[in-house]
Image 1 (spheres, rainbow over the protein chains, first blue to last red):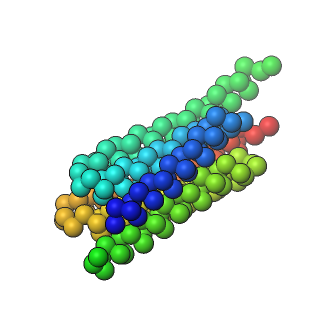
Image 2 (tube, rainbow over the protein chains, first blue to last red):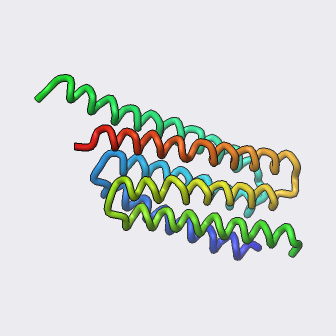
Length: 93
Length: 94
């Protein structure tokens, strides 16, 4: 069982590296926000695996907190991108 | 290894696979909308699968209930976040 968990943690870590690459590259601001959202999801998965590995199930509560904050942040960033473009259009060139 | 543990291991493997697919798609796709499409669905399903696996793994009623509720929460809020981002990109496209 513990071998399976370690293998899955490696997979999640590899996925985090790929998401981090998009966070650094991403041409559009939305790409970076999307990569951050994905990183938060991967952190939730990693913490759940860690909870199963150590038997400390309060890690699940930490994962739930990270998920809550990441959702609010993503929606706020979407609204920010929209309003920023609208303000720039209202001010004119 | 009990049947429940095997089922949990399979669920966790499926979740990790979906997360890896989401990360690979976010890395290699060429368009912002394609990347949103990829991450919005597979990452959500991956997290939900992993939390359900933890619910099966724990063998404790309270933890299992919390994990299941967290899975439902992620299934609801994941697409909402991606929809907000996609709407912002669509409305501000040049």
